[in-house]
Image 1 (cartoon, helix red, strand yellow):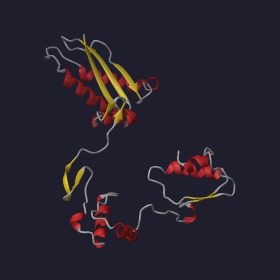
Image 2: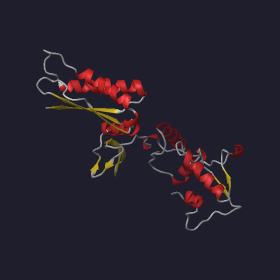
Image 3: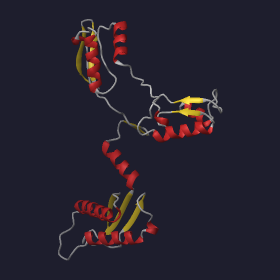
Image 4: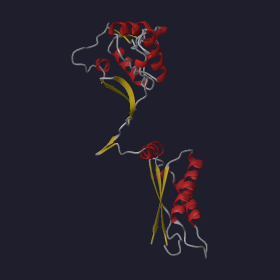
Length: 253
């Protein structure tokens, strides 16, 4: 949706690229965004433009959006701040910026290098550090705001990459014996009709795990579910080199 991307695709309302135009990329692609940038470059060529960018003929066209040391000094000399709080960049960048401010005769006691969440309090007596406040990303999910926990995100990530594998076993609640063949449901992991051999082997593994002998005490189904999840998960990884989320369901009747 950037202006240049809309120009490249011919969707910009005011500016149209025509044959003979020259477009210069004065920035380097943000890591992870390379494919989209290459698509924009290709679209510009399709529009007939001549495109100048860093990869072409070893031309270096990147212009940093960050000021150099002398530009920072110029800004400090013009503004002459009483207090100085460097805030952009990683922590070591803040330290370097602080050193430039000290070089420009700003008292070190009036310079605050802080982490996210630290509070700087200003009043008639000056400025000082005063505790911390909660900070970080707030995730919005439907009607919930900030209630999505890391474990939920981890589970969603596993399901999105390797899928889920549900094992449903019906057992006698008195004897603990398996009453029917375990049902298997796969979503995003394998196509069941084309993986019958793997599914049948998984059923055999579930039968083995849940097998009970005469005289054994009633099973601890929480422990048994954990055992099914761990052993079936390892079985699937050994056979596919993938690790879906294994969800065991034990129904007592």
